[in-house]
Length: 222
Ligand code: C5P
Figure (cartoon, rainbow, N blue to C red):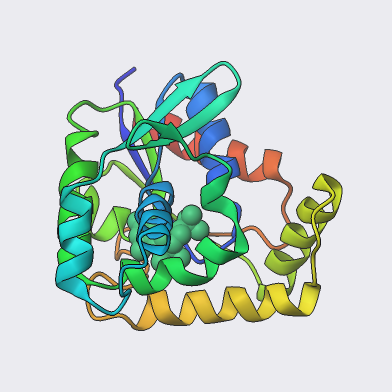
């Protein structure tokens, strides 16, 4: 069998990272979470009180920022300038600001460059918003994962509640809609299904079913 590149794109909270991680595990591929990179820059920008509307300042900040994704036994870790920020990049504060950082062209150009450097070899599953359209346009497998806003919000709500976090279902719906809108309407590399992507609606599928579907598609291409 031949090692491939698998691009998984789709709107917020559609289950991309959960599925991508499992697919990577089953195939012994590397998983790369590009959202974590935008989240890390956002965390740093918020900490340093950088103006999120200032494209040049953000691009400059990114030049001075090291983001390392690493995989270990206990899952994926994200290091921002050497510090483990795996949890800090998942706060509501970061989530509600990340799309404003990610919409700038100069920020995206640098991120895409870094992401492409991580795909020098095949055998990767990468998830994000522009992977099939910009980061790996020649990926052998492209998946566009969707689910209704209600379903996505409910999954996130259940996840939060189980972790003992405060969670408001209506607020989650609003946040998801808002993020999708900014990501879909931005000028540079908006969230859009690549022409050759396979759409997978996960609204009424379990995680296992989605994983199997994708692994089956991969096996057909190997
Ligand atoms: O996937 P995740 O929800 O962690 O992504 C956070 C945000 O990062 C997205 O809402 C989007 O604004 C941005 N993003 C992006 N392009 C990617 C990955 C994430 O613009 N490839």
